[in-house]
Amino acid sequence: MKKQETNPDPLFATCYKVRFYDTDLSTTAFFSNYPKWLDSIAVIDYLAHKGIDWQELLKRNIDVAIAHISFDFLAPLFLNDDVEMAVEKVQLGNKSIRISGSFYRGYARELVAQGELVYVFVDGSTRKTIPIPEDFREKLP
Image (cartoon, rainbow, N blue to C red; front, side, top):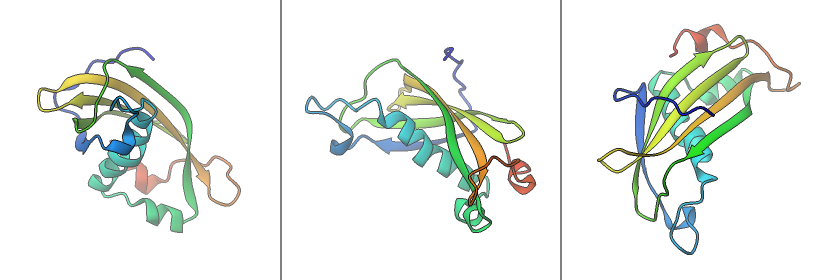
């Protein structure tokens, strides 16, 4: 992944505190948590902020699958660090959405990681790709 420019005014930002279960014995956060945090915290909170409810999509038999993950590690996070997760960029394709984000330590906003997730929209029953629903598309970026 090519290092992206950070945005002082991201599309959305949310915070998280590194917990004990996020770390190893040296209290360093496992790097595998970064994609999880972007996916399950930052992206979900961003979409809710934009008025998109995943549960409503699931009721319509629409789901997403992660097709690509790319992350660059720049500095470690440790137990009790405050982390700002910023959704920097959203790109809509026909059947996919690419979301880029950055992770910052504390209020000084020290950049510690950058990542990208690509989601593909699928029919919940067949798991075959489908176009992004128009009502979803209209609410982004």
